[in-house]
Image (tube, rainbow, N blue to C red; front, top):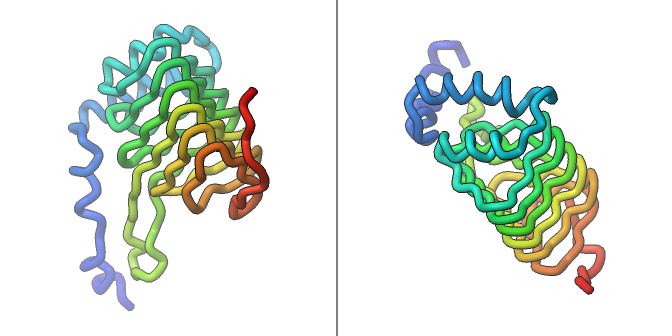
Length: 185
């Protein structure tokens, strides 16, 4: 297939779906570089205030550690007393909702976009992610597009969630499979 044939396959639909004008995306890019992606400013209150200023819905008591990457805060909701660990990447090309008392451990990755390998131009496909209350995503774990992690489910370190995680269940592996029930004492 020639380059001109590929021109009919595109992602023209993509920019309107992100919900913000170019100036806001650029302003967020630089704000993120200075205040979120660097480790020099560990002031949590400033980070949550900046997220709110850019349209994120952030509950009280949320902790955001250094070197966190958030693609588009206006597409993000974080419930009360949740913890976002160091080097977490929330690649939210569409809505990501994190419930209350949730934990994203160091290096966790929430991935809302993928590409359609059946299309010549690898068209972008996006789907939101929901982490309900009490969910724990382990260090270096990945949550794929369209996944719902139901109340108090756990995705262990280094695991990859390719299907929904049931409530009070611990998942492990690639792809993540249920290994046991979560008991909260």
